[in-house]
Image 1 (tube, rainbow, N blue to C red):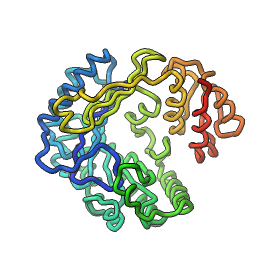
Image 2 (cartoon, rainbow, N blue to C red; image 1 turned 90 degrees about the horizontal axis):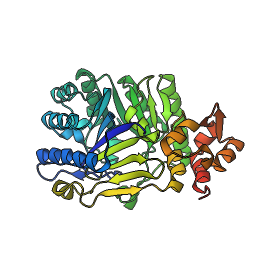
Image 3 (cartoon, one colour; image 1 turned 180 degrees about the horizontal axis):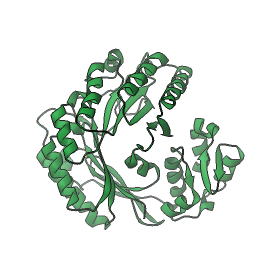
Image 4 (cartoon, rainbow, N blue to C red; image 1 turned 45 degrees about the vertical axis):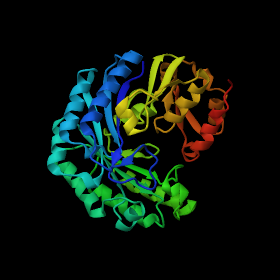
Length: 380
């Protein structure tokens, strides 16, 4: 069976950003922290019983929304309750998403004392003008202060989220953002392009974005700058110092398993290979979730014919690619079920192969959508 992680979704935030398509809701009244922690623990109990999961958990990721709005006391109760229900790996990675507007040194020191050992801080930009256009509630100064607080609170492992291709922005502004981030000495930087997702304010009222040539040039300049400072790209939008890749997200991209608890949370579980691999989902409405974490939730089986593309879409996000052995171990299918797309990609130099391991070439990496298209039409 694949390795197992746990994703926990906390759906509240101070303000809904115009580009955000996550299941997040602006706080209008007092957040029902205690009731929500109860619901999360009930949700986990039901999942473990329903799916018969007994494997140890290697990573926990608490995302949102803005989970750092919750108190250390709530997270203590949550993590204690989880440890009573599942076995936890000795080198457990626990990531907490945080926004700069919620940072207090004492509060985050308490988070660290609970065993939360990694932060992911939603910076997006250090430029005040761009932050206002993105609808963020923090300033560039607060963003700098948040990273400094992370160090002071004892976090020696944290990520900074940055966007490029922002409204009316160019290469210079993104380069300045990367330089500012590097100066704060994070172990990990996520650097990804702003996209206008359906059901967002920006999709309905699109801002003026840079043209494709500017976006591509910005990406190349900033990737080179990251590489010069020993931030190694290991995934499409993820760069880390050696030894600090996000283990939780690696598990996603390696087609590992994960339980998903919380309003709107998703999971993926291998119950039997290859015919009982399922994707789970929970009700999106926080109010509905608080009433019953499993009502209007459920699980959809991934059809055997869809497994090759599901695996490829995840693994080819990684620079390390995949091996024939990992494909067969996580899907239960033989490597020849990737044919003829695999051979076509090798012939067209979109993929390279060495000792049973397959990687995107530089050409394939730049045209990943074209690579994936070939696996969309595999024989059924």
